[in-house]
Image (cartoon, rainbow, N blue to C red; front, side, top):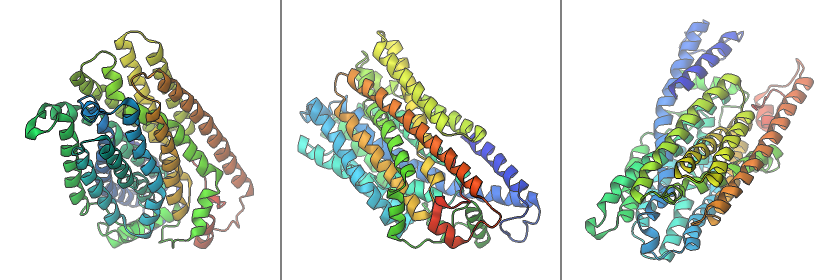
Length: 489
């Protein structure tokens, strides 16, 4: 990922160097282009070092705590709790029902309060809930605890995406969101190794290996959440880890990026703008299509691999290579998206790669070939998600509308995640076929978005005049509809 950030930095330096004047003055040293570029580079790296490690770690733990039930299943969870396949799938769906219900409210709470308190608190609570998963003794207990886990994890992803939007200009967010989402792929790889090791604790303390998976991974989340209170930053306009000149320079950058950087008062009219924008709904539907494939694959990957004829301990370890390939694929594709300044076409290509993987899974007769299909499906699905999840953060303004748009994307996307588990059981032909259908739907939505975003830019170019208004008040009121705002597609 360092190569991605370096290439992005070089492109930003070229852009800054081509501007006729500096947007800010940092300790009197920004009179020259070189000094301005050095100051900007130092500022971005300082923000990276504060935000990316802790927030990516939180998401890794979030994805680990929601998907480790797949590892626990092949170690005896379903047998001990007397779960039929439909009952197990219901427990998965209940998580996403809660997730969908609480995402938008959580982001509204975040907007009105402080991420420095809200995000670590969410992590602490879901860590406690995750530990409780290892203590359940019946089906009803599992249903209740999965619902609580979904409710407590719901605010992290949309909250972090929104937090990125007040620290990074639009062209910088793409790589950061991809790195952040890469935590999901790493969680799959890390979770397989961890589940293999923890599974050997079978019988210790009178508990099964699958119980220890929930307990130990939940305790790890609790520990990290306590550290997060001291590391997760507050809003950019009052960030204490930045000096006053650095804050001024950052806010000037954000303001020059056509998105007001000052504190925007909460108003319901901006919430209405999000719900009445067809492009916002497009981002939501795009993730809806991809989310079905993401969660039907990630939650069931250990079982899918085990059903190819491998033993449970082998299946745990064999989840590592597909997830590792997915992480590498994310890195390569995001680098390409920055280099070629394209988004929709790469999302479409990722969907095609995933579809090929599913076709291999459906048609191949040998375990080795089917396992190769898992690799292709994982690479395509994770990569497409990494690209699409940063899209509304780059294309929606101002602040409240963007916060709601991001939450809407995750909310309506995860309705696809609710559907995914309900089609999966011991026979995966049907969910694989449905996943192909959802990915084809995503291709159509991505094409729709690309058409309207390109058309929007052309319409604004045609209306552009030297007298075009650029006041903060107008830009805050109009957001991405302002004539100076340009979409990324």
